[in-house]
Image 1 (cartoon, protein in one colour):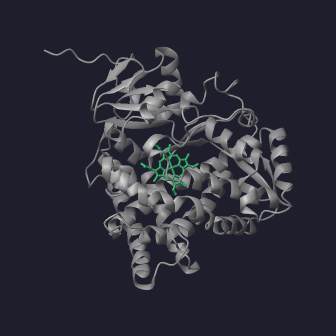
Image 2 (cartoon, rainbow, N blue to C red):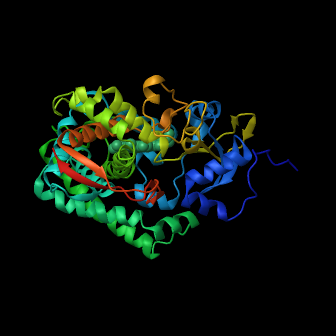
Image 3 (cartoon, rainbow, N blue to C red):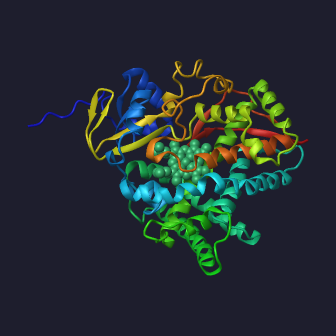
Length: 439
Ligand code: HEM
């Protein structure tokens, strides 16, 4: 009889672990790390060996692609589809990523700056002087407008409302606590109400996307948006994406890119409102531009860059970047067997005082003093699967912040300490009420 592999330490495997993880991943991972050291073994959605040590993170992110395998559970397939990038592994992932990645970089990205700028200006024009808004909602609305126009390519005003409605229904269905709990417990039946609601909402959104795709197939794709670029992209054999693959990838980008960027903006208001010195320094830097039209100049602002990084560091939207092993992996002295999950844990790494002195403190200056490497700062994951929209996300957050701060003043109305709670798949500050005043 073979002896079972020696796994890193962890608590006895009990039912509470997925629940504690689901409720507060930051607290859960930090407690497990403090108690068991690095790496440690826990059950999140599956049995997982977690590391937050730069050496362990490097071992995960630099392992050959065939070390890992992706098998999305049915609950995630329900949301993302079968042909989206995040559900692929091996050669299929490499081929698809090679086509998608250029759409989010360089010239393609720069071509979207004007649309993002216009979305922020338009939102501002709809706000009454003195109005109080919840930053998560206000930023979600801007983020949604950005995704609809830049990624889905919705360029007719009359189309925006039905698209917005369909996306909100879809987001409400996959962010529904009953669906999240069923996913965690592995309830996959099609007739289970939370699953049925999600399937219907996704079908509604899929129908609108197919109409957009059909129009482009008939009338040409000479536009700057990402859908058009995806439709023009060709694999080495000359073939392009099928309609199903386009729909799944558009929805994957929506799910991966919408709330993540919007919440980064909400975090910026939550932190800057509590740190007037940082807010003043940022305001002075942005005002120094003498306007918000120069997208390249906005991107080059050093303090804005540091503020965005600090927001991404403190409460990373994805606290653990997970990989399933197709082959054994050497991880900090352990051989982790095939079939298990390993995770690079930003929730703990980003609190390492050796990399980030006084890690709990909001202190953007730390990123001006020291640049951090790809195993020290991982809000976008890393390796072959690093977030394909990472440049897009930061690009968008910087433009929106620059426009809002150039044209308005904001007072955070929250008085107590910052509290964090689950927000669909992600974690978010519980309340970020802000009073807006036009400048
Ligand atoms: C601040 C904003 C964002 C954050 C914090 C974020 C974070 C992440 C993280 C942690 C991953 C997993 C990476 C890994 O497994 O190593 C990921 C993957 C991904 N993200 Fe983002 N993301 C953001 C914005 C976006 C945007 C704007 C898009 C597209 C519009 C996007 C599309 C994707 C896709 C398609 C993947 C899967 C990549 C693959 O499997 O190859 N993300 N993101």
